[in-house]
Length: 193
Image 1 (cartoon, one colour):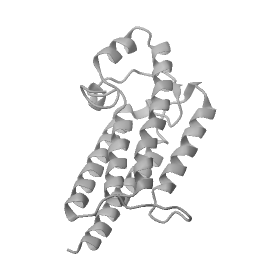
Image 2 (tube, helix red, strand yellow):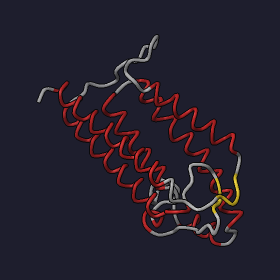
Image 3 (tube, helix red, strand yellow):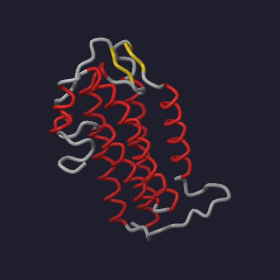
Image 4 (cartoon, rainbow, N blue to C red):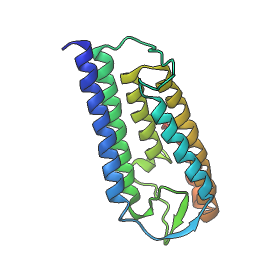
């Protein structure tokens, strides 16, 4: 296949992964517990807004931008992009299914909230964020633009802000169990960070 055709195919597969993620998220959102405690809703909306802007900037066609291409696309880059994105999708779906009714898009505690330490939560405290970062890496590999790299830097930073809020809330709600869990399980990358 020609490199441009493989880029289209890889781009479509990466986009399909994001579509599957969004559809699954919307459907699964109907099966959550009632919220018992909410934490800083303004930060949640700020984070969502910044993420939308970052994703919009990753497009190759941002009006008025000099969205420079940083590397030459090859079919191997496309294959790696697809595999990384699929791996990220599998992690986010596994993590979301494991959280079940405890999940929320906002930083909240649910009624009868449980501290989940099974499934992917055995390896990292925030596997949904790990998977989203992998999906972002896959997208960046396909697009290969300066704006996409900016998104790749911005997404983990925004997720780290939300992660920090969640950890404060979980530490307050599980004052003995969460610090112990935090001391033995890394936040995003097993054995590293």
